[in-house]
Length: 119
Image 1 (spheres, rainbow, N blue to C red):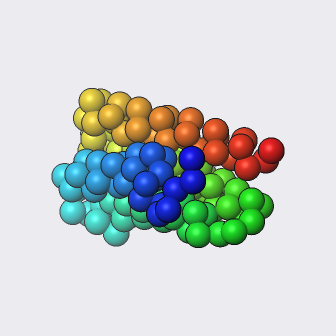
Image 2 (image 1 turned 60 degrees about the vertical axis):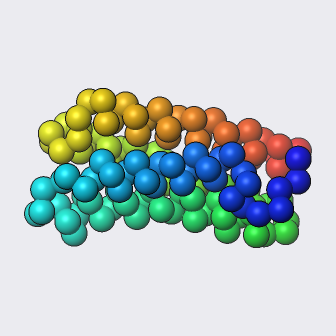
Image 3 (image 1 turned 135 degrees about the horizontal axis):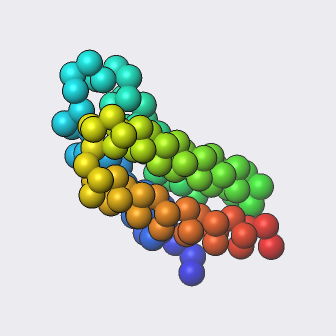
Protein backbone atom coordinates (compact mmCIF):
# COMPACT_ATOMS: atom_id res chain seq x y z
CA UNK A 1 0.00 0.00 0.00
CA UNK A 2 1.38 3.38 -1.01
CA UNK A 3 0.75 6.01 1.62
CA UNK A 4 0.25 9.60 0.54
CA UNK A 5 1.42 11.06 3.85
CA UNK A 6 3.44 9.75 6.76
CA UNK A 7 0.47 10.21 9.11
CA UNK A 8 -1.29 7.40 7.22
CA UNK A 9 1.40 4.89 8.24
CA UNK A 10 0.32 2.62 11.11
CA UNK A 11 3.90 2.66 12.45
CA UNK A 12 3.84 6.46 12.63
CA UNK A 13 0.45 6.31 14.39
CA UNK A 14 1.97 3.97 17.00
CA UNK A 15 4.98 6.23 17.40
CA UNK A 16 2.72 9.26 17.82
CA UNK A 17 0.72 7.43 20.51
CA UNK A 18 4.03 6.66 22.22
CA UNK A 19 4.98 10.35 22.27
CA UNK A 20 1.67 11.25 23.86
CA UNK A 21 1.98 8.42 26.38
CA UNK A 22 5.55 9.36 27.32
CA UNK A 23 4.55 13.01 27.81
CA UNK A 24 1.66 11.89 30.01
CA UNK A 25 3.76 9.43 32.02
CA UNK A 26 6.64 11.87 32.49
CA UNK A 27 4.44 14.79 33.54
CA UNK A 28 4.58 13.50 37.12
CA UNK A 29 8.36 13.09 37.28
CA UNK A 30 10.03 15.12 40.04
CA UNK A 31 10.88 18.73 39.27
CA UNK A 32 14.61 18.02 39.65
CA UNK A 33 14.32 15.67 36.66
CA UNK A 34 12.92 18.41 34.40
CA UNK A 35 16.24 18.92 32.60
CA UNK A 36 17.41 15.33 32.95
CA UNK A 37 15.28 12.19 32.62
CA UNK A 38 12.06 14.04 31.73
CA UNK A 39 13.66 15.87 28.83
CA UNK A 40 15.65 12.84 27.70
CA UNK A 41 12.75 10.39 27.49
CA UNK A 42 10.57 12.97 25.76
CA UNK A 43 13.24 13.79 23.19
CA UNK A 44 13.80 10.09 22.49
CA UNK A 45 10.06 9.52 22.00
CA UNK A 46 9.73 12.51 19.68
CA UNK A 47 12.74 11.23 17.74
CA UNK A 48 10.89 8.00 16.96
CA UNK A 49 7.98 9.61 15.13
CA UNK A 50 10.17 12.35 13.62
CA UNK A 51 12.56 9.83 12.07
CA UNK A 52 9.65 7.86 10.65
CA UNK A 53 8.30 11.05 9.10
CA UNK A 54 11.70 12.01 7.71
CA UNK A 55 12.27 8.52 6.34
CA UNK A 56 8.91 8.70 4.62
CA UNK A 57 10.07 11.82 2.80
CA UNK A 58 13.18 10.17 1.40
CA UNK A 59 13.09 8.69 -2.09
CA UNK A 60 15.77 6.01 -1.89
CA UNK A 61 15.38 2.81 0.10
CA UNK A 62 18.81 3.20 1.69
CA UNK A 63 17.97 6.70 2.93
CA UNK A 64 14.58 5.56 4.19
CA UNK A 65 16.12 2.60 6.02
CA UNK A 66 18.65 4.78 7.82
CA UNK A 67 15.90 6.92 9.34
CA UNK A 68 13.90 3.83 10.29
CA UNK A 69 17.00 2.37 11.96
CA UNK A 70 17.45 5.64 13.87
CA UNK A 71 13.82 5.46 14.93
CA UNK A 72 14.30 1.89 16.17
CA UNK A 73 17.34 2.97 18.17
CA UNK A 74 15.31 5.72 19.80
CA UNK A 75 12.65 3.17 20.74
CA UNK A 76 15.22 1.21 22.71
CA UNK A 77 16.33 4.47 24.32
CA UNK A 78 12.73 5.16 25.41
CA UNK A 79 12.48 1.64 26.83
CA UNK A 80 15.70 2.06 28.81
CA UNK A 81 14.65 5.41 30.20
CA UNK A 82 11.22 4.06 31.12
CA UNK A 83 12.97 1.26 33.03
CA UNK A 84 15.03 3.84 34.88
CA UNK A 85 11.92 5.89 35.66
CA UNK A 86 10.10 2.78 36.90
CA UNK A 87 13.02 1.67 39.06
CA UNK A 88 13.34 5.15 40.58
CA UNK A 89 9.63 5.12 41.40
CA UNK A 90 8.80 7.91 38.95
CA UNK A 91 6.65 5.64 36.75
CA UNK A 92 4.29 2.92 37.92
CA UNK A 93 4.76 -0.68 36.82
CA UNK A 94 1.54 -0.39 34.82
CA UNK A 95 2.76 2.82 33.18
CA UNK A 96 6.03 1.15 32.30
CA UNK A 97 4.24 -1.86 30.77
CA UNK A 98 2.04 0.43 28.72
CA UNK A 99 5.14 2.17 27.33
CA UNK A 100 6.94 -1.16 26.82
CA UNK A 101 4.03 -2.70 24.91
CA UNK A 102 3.83 0.27 22.56
CA UNK A 103 7.61 0.25 22.09
CA UNK A 104 7.53 -3.46 21.23
CA UNK A 105 4.66 -3.05 18.76
CA UNK A 106 6.41 -0.15 17.04
CA UNK A 107 9.70 -2.06 16.82
CA UNK A 108 7.85 -5.00 15.28
CA UNK A 109 6.28 -2.76 12.62
CA UNK A 110 9.56 -0.96 11.91
CA UNK A 111 11.37 -4.26 11.48
CA UNK A 112 8.82 -5.31 8.86
CA UNK A 113 9.35 -2.06 6.96
CA UNK A 114 13.14 -2.31 7.16
CA UNK A 115 13.03 -5.90 5.91
CA UNK A 116 10.77 -4.90 3.02
CA UNK A 117 13.12 -2.07 2.03
CA UNK A 118 16.10 -4.43 2.12
CA UNK A 119 14.36 -6.46 -0.54
